Length: 267
Ligand code: SAH
Image 1: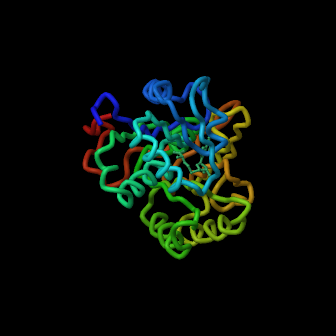
Image 2: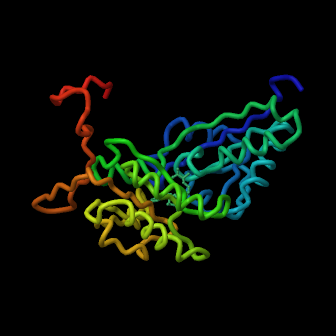
Image 3: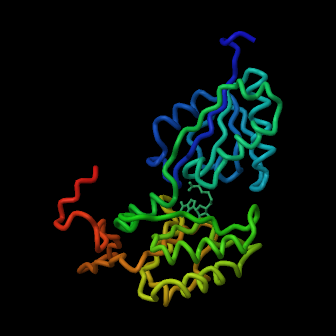
């Protein structure tokens, strides 16, 4: 096959929901695609897609979707495979590379590239203020692909280490109880005054933000559209005369090398 006939796969992130948070790079990759693959709900959110072949599938079909994209590209098509948020954050990008690694050797020669997107954690943080201003981590609470005991261990260690923690996939109809167990584990390892935010459907018309504390949070408020930000004991809440308070985590931790507020880190 000559390079003019070569297909391509772009694994791209659609951002958290609003079209304003779709990057130009992702939009261009979508425009160029002849085939678009993704979870039905994500395809429904896309800007105009006339003339493209859409392949909607169910959540959970990631590996077969990835194989399908690679097969189409191997046959010469330009393919976009989409994730909400960023494709590299609990999204399609890793599934595509799993499919490349397990698939025929010829797939390794394909033009496959990842186009980043605004992940839910960053969109939620921006709405809240600057809760990720110091060290943070992201944990996927779904135990579909990893044991629950490992999730509990990571929650415990992250809480002990003082990370601000973003919890993805906190709950679904199939696992309503696990988010309660997760909060129990966090409460055993972090003070009850640590701020917590439930950020629901950020960037969409049904967006909702709830600010509370680790001690008072009701984990039942989380659903599949919710990203939970668990602040550290250093995370602060600034009350305002009206409207939503800001959450931020100061850059400085006691014992830092620079005493004054003159940190020489790039910002
Ligand atoms: N690749 C996606 C994450 C997929 S996992 C990303 O980078 O954002 C799905 C989880 O992401 C959801 O259960 C929820 O926790 C979070 N999420 C995705 N979009 C969201 C949004 N608009 N608002 C809040 N949380 C969101």
